[in-house]
Length: 207
Image 1 (spheres, rainbow, N blue to C red):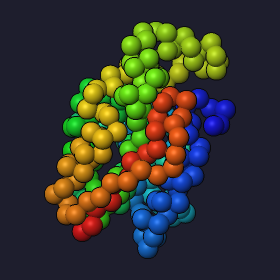
Image 2: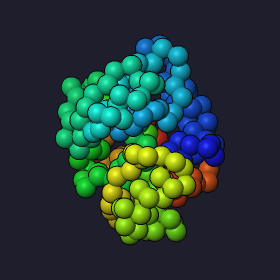
Image 3: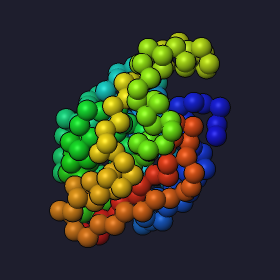
Image 4: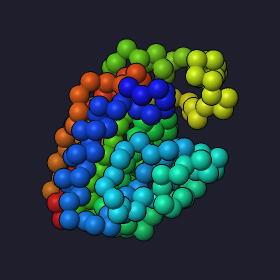
């Protein structure tokens, strides 16, 4: 675990890096969407990848130096042209939106037929999942300000719908990409982060 409370789980990230390298092999200039990119990237990608950052906050986009292209928009409504990306990464964001299924449908639309979808979200059934959901939003902001010295932490209300259980998320991601062709989902890495986030789910579709 790194010292940055917003950085996610390093161990899972390293395993995910190797998985993405394998799945994106042969795509020298892969286009990757970092959906809800925030102030920095969460996943290390191979050299040559063109990363597009999508975020609802202009302030967070301005801070991000890891993406090559910045787009201001909501993952639940912003529509990229079909078949725009080789991979879509959404890291610890689906729990903060009202309609995660809409975001997943838009991810599937933007993916190429043989695209890769990477999702990371808190486990609804973990101890910290419900605790995070039902703790008042103002307490979250106070905690990050007091414990980590972050004056304006990029914290959003946590909805964490029951549709975001690990099994439901994997099923939903597979069903929204089913029009691509044959899709399969797997989890990489092990353990959970401090936010109760389990190993990322990677869905690969064969064109």
